[in-house]
Length: 573
Image (cartoon, rainbow, N blue to C red):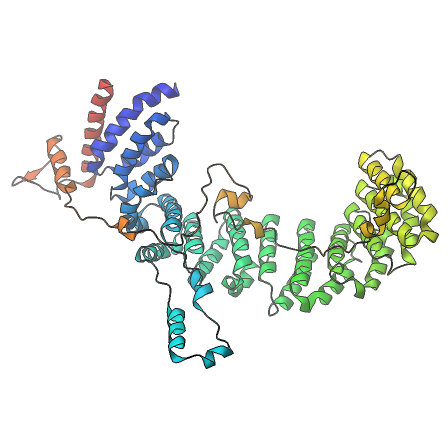
């Protein structure tokens, strides 16, 4: 049925679009052209559709613009040659187009601008030149040549500036999607010195409903990684409210962590102390991770954060304690020599902690730095050997690693205990545990079947491990265009169109020049009006009396005329 209906409707729509577009009846075009273009069509009809789109792109009606650009994006998004002549017209019409049409046009113009203009970001990297002491001894001519190179400022293309200037007023739009579209356009196209104007508009959207907040905060989180200065003045706008859902709380926490610096870290840490006490355990755990990231990024507060996390180890909430242990483990890897006491304190808590990840982290720390706690490590192995059968698989693996490291560094005290643990692992239900047990036994207990690797057992188990990097989960999203579904999901979605890289040399701007032609639309509209029902047309001295004919009458007349013409076309088909 779809094939039959498209076969019937296609020639009719083509005829209507080609022959009746001069009537300026945008309501018809908006409703039916959009409905027709997005249905499944025969690929052989694509060229005819492109001809229709090319004709409709020349229409100056604001109601037509959004629909035809949507059709362009669906049918032939790579045909940017169709946009050249209409680029300036679309920029000028943008403010008057309906809101959802504005969104489509802005995204299309963003892709178009990335292929036609030179990057405005080069000025921040190449224009400024640092002078060294050798400049003092150079001749005046050489100095003048260098001065000329330094003074060579970036000249933005007038069409590039036109796009930025005409989209700026839309930052005040009542539609959050329009504001987000303009924000991503400025982020991807504007010079870095001008992109800051989008901050206030995005922060304003945080007063909207939670769904809008979620999308806006995700985009702000990506922006705040690369350009912290844009949102630092609005830091308090990201403070968490008690009524916020968990997803909003987590995103605000992420943004505050990205904006942390030496000047505001003390304020943020006081705010984080309140969040740790939250009844929302998932948010409390995320706050502890944020404290760990702040301690890694800002060395001045590393010790303060570490001491605060150690205090959390005595918290009654098991989830808070477990997350604190995991974060402390990562922080201790950066400077383990100075924190032997903390490792001893965590070893004492092993009996009370039941969360597998936290227990595994403590065992890993004790095994990694067993030489700094030679009296405690063997006793920890003894206690865990008793409960080996009842432990989680993650904890069992760390018990085996602890036994192997103690066997290599303190075999007198732990040889028999390690063999006992290896025997338990040999018959464990999990094949991962059994495989790890065989591997460790062959390495640390040499025999005739052992290979050459047994000679390097110490280097394998006791090698220095690089400290983990505590990074933002939004760091790898910057390769997706802001405001898109792919950016939200952090995965390429169907239909996603990538932004191209800036060209090294801008294409010829003359392709956007348009020859001014006399418009005949008014005269043709008068003809149609005169040919319609005489009861609706009132003439005075051979001309139409525009005051007598109301707008509703004109729309009714045009609608009747269009469908009368269309009915005969369908009958002919």
